[in-house]
Image (tube, rainbow, N blue to C red):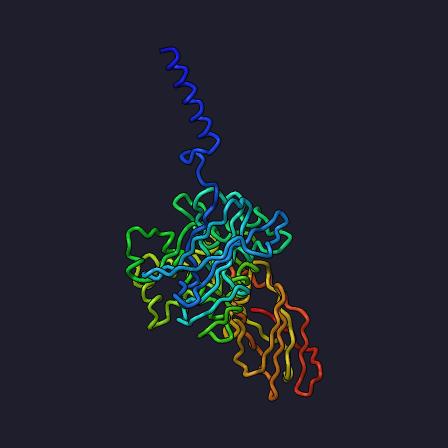
Length: 410
């Protein structure tokens, strides 16, 4: 009996040693990371070749690697969902993803072909890279976030994390606990059937509505509003980031987004817009962008007219002046509405920071009195005394300077 016990013990030792040396598959697990998510500006289409997602490592200095860790196809499901799955192995640092291929613009219906040079982008900090599957949606909003964090000197894990948070807060994309999560919350295909599903959360519906608003915003800035170019798409989204201070969208951009939401709802014969307007939640979110209650944590931007007039005597041939608006006030970002004149004069403007230089001229003279309206936007309209008029030069019909005239706001 004693010999049998010793033999059994020896055999168990050999077996356990073998298992330890070879590794126990039930406990060791796979240490690789798989990134998975949707790709959406509008949803991508099935094409040959298919769209691609390239995942790049970012080093400690914030520099993107020259070659991708992984490049995979964008898959398009029967319901229109465009998604990707990419195993990046044991990489543990921050990453940035580029998505490119063909998608249908939600606002215009145009087919837009993004290249790797003009791609949607998303980034994750090192703290988000873990063994297993990690959600990484690539959207117009994540592209804004990458643009905010992207200067080479600052594109680090800390900058990526901060920009993802900033954009989520600015646009109200937060989870059930109020945590901003633009890479983790998944927008859906904007169809009536999808938006009606009980499994689709309010945050997903909000995200979906905002992507359509951003499509309209891009179209409004395009040289051809019916069909923005890939470069215009990425430039417009990057421009949003350029006006942001932390999680606050700049006044002019916030106003442009409000206008885009208004223009989007006015579209007819557009299946995406019809679906958004037909669903109570998404139509409500678009309206919340229109009135400013969704952007910047719900601080609405109001539009007000600032009028300029001449005071004096004589016949005016031309007017040159400069208007400096107080901080937080922006000219309404639409060149056909932002600054207008009923005088019939030729007008030219140039805005740098808060100062706008204005020139008007008319061969048969400009009427004395009100000559210009500047539509401005701010959370609160400023006092007239806070607006500065400078660099004024007024001439008569022969080009001689008239010193008896002044320009004043009212």
